[in-house]
Length: 345
Image 1 (spheres, helix red, strand yellow):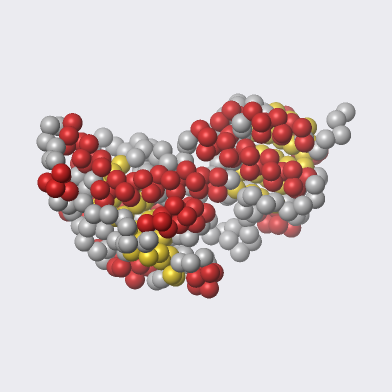
Image 2 (cartoon, rainbow, N blue to C red):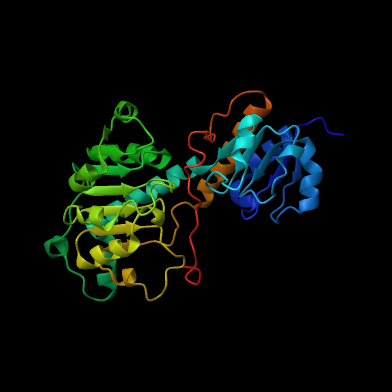
C-alpha cells in the first residue's frame, strides 16, 4: 500500500488537461496517492469508499451530501469551480479544522488583462471602428476620432477590490490614473495602504471616468448598481462589467447604454447565452463578450499550479500560501453563482 497521503481528485465539470499542465499533473501524483483523477464525475460509491482515508478533496461543487463525518483524516477541500462551494457544511469544516479553499485568484491575471483591453477598446472605439470599417463606413484620421478619448490621466474606480482589482491596478498604473475603490469588506486603512483612495459608492460613480465592476456576488450586492446609481454616472464614462451581472440592474443598464448615457464593456450577462432579441445587442456604445475573460488555456493552468502548491503545503503541516481560505465571518455572505439560460430566466 502506498504511504502517500490520499487525495480525491474529482474535478468534473473541468477537464484534467484544462486545469493541470503536464508538470503540475506529475507533481500532484508525486506528492499524493490520487483517487479517481478522471474527467468524468466520480461515482458516489467510489467517493464514499475513498473518503475515510482522504486528507484532501479536489472538486468543483460539493455534490456529495452530508458525508463529512465519514472523512476522519480530511484536512482540506479545494474547489476548482471558481468560488467557495456553498452547499458544503461550512460550520462542520470550521469545527473540525478542514480548510476550504477557492481557486478564484487564478482568474485574476486573465480577467484583469481583458478588463484593460476592453476599457481601451471602449474609449478609443476600436471595436466600433472595426465594425464601421467592415460596413464600408470608416472615417479616417481626425474624423474617426471625434468621440474618442484616452485612458491616460483619468479617474478610475474599482467596485470591489479583490484579486482582480489588485492585478488590474498593476496593469493600469502606468497610465497615470487616479485610483479609487469601493469595497465594504475592507477597511479604509487597508485600501489606502495599497495606494488607492477608499470612496463611497455614490462618490465613486459620480467622479470616475472609468468604472470597473469587479465585486464577487454576495447576498448583499444583488443589483447593487440600481437604476438610480447608474443614472449618477457621468456622461460618456466607461463602465467595464467583469465580475457578475448579479451586481447590476441589467435592464436599467441596457436602457441607459441605449440612451447613450455612458459606454459599456461587459464579459458577463444576466442569461447565457444572451437571447438573440436582447436589446443590448443593438447598443452601439456597448462592447459585448461571451464570458471569455477567464478561460484562456495558459491561464487555467494556474488552477493546477496553485492547487498543487497549497496541497503540498497543507500535507507538510504548513498553511496554504496561494489560495484564499473560507472565513467564518464571510461564509454566509457569499451568493451562489447562477447564470441561467434564457429558458430558465
